[in-house]
Length: 171
Length: 431
Image 1 (cartoon, rainbow over the protein chains, first blue to last red):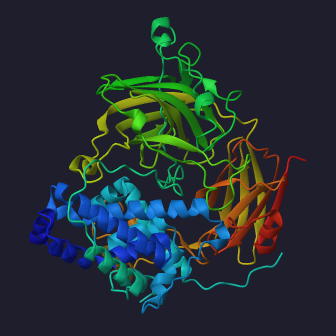
Image 2: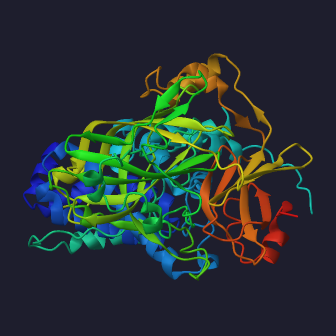
């Protein structure tokens, strides 16, 4: 990957394309966890690819490529999510469990989709992408202890999703 | 293996990426421009997402209080600080916790609040000014409703090398996307600085970290910022007290930042130093009410109490809890989940002590005024839902709670809509 990044910095499109395609899974999981629908995720990923291509020659440390890419992606996802919240009435925002394609791991999407994005982000970055706590803190621009707290809270939420519901009292 | 563990383990598994994503990536890569663009990339405004759900909700209630004591006894010094004593009035309409603080906040004046008695009987001298690494903090006014300390302050970069007017504005209300903007539900923004450090209550608590604190307000000029900090206390504190703040870092973002530069990555707008402050505070026991609700479902979960202050409403819910058993399986789970975390940062004992909920963790809660205006939700933590009172009349409130369906209540469009969807309804009045 180091060689690919160096070549991409030299404006080698093929090398850059290889780098990006290797991150397809990661980018998709993060984007869908934040934005909850494929169309917005596609927009965010597209904007991220273009932004990275524009700035890759400025990347001084090639080993930080994935961290750098992820940070830009999350920023784009947050921007798109905010724009949609400004223009849509809330009842037109998809339910957390809606996704537009069939996945083998539907339960995964259901649970991650129900989490607040700030929890889904850290879960995916830590367990999905295997970023270190310090790296996640840099990507999300928060303190390391905040990352840990969010991980703990996210796991508690996931645990609670699997507990059996009891009949609700009707008022 | 428990399902939640399987889910965590599955996060690194591959998923089927839909065609729309694959095609978009392919098309974008096929159309990469040949020439480099010139000029800086303008930073977008971003929604305030800085742990807003966790903001001010640390279990040790450690948000940082920015305390700055101005030497009021020195007129020349005071003349250089025209905002001191009236910063609330400058920022209170745009910050997250809105409202009129003018008749409740206390100015920090050295001669009147020089000291405060702490539990040991000792009198602690207030410290309202801190200066280090070319940055001076000056505390202005303070207000405490028993669960949070609201503090205003002025921040000055003395070397004239800051660019505070380029700090991005972020949204301080959560209405966008939930309800249409209106006079009662304004869509407000504020600039933000990000300090980090520790805090403690003199004679009452140990030091605890401050990670999610933000300093909301506005830049007066490139080197001067005024704003409000909200420090959540660890619990409701009916007694007056003394808050110690130990700041170690102050940082800000700039719209001029080059997103792709190493400087941006390393945060060039960061100052590491030491700014220690001591702020005596008085608890407003007159305007803050704690109402016992004790409305529970059959299995024991429900609404325990509601705290109503002039600037926030907190709904305390209760859910039956259990804890993990100390066995090999639990130990293996801890080792797997915390492989990158040091023992002293989060111990196995702490893992065993974590509360586990038998039902879905959170009640989704919404609070309406009698006029049908929903209060601005500020997130939830530890099963408690926080709302900004935003200057509305909170003497007559409707609280609606539904278990297990995140955002279902916040999405409600009216009191009637919330009533139809909720599991628990409570009407709180002054009568």
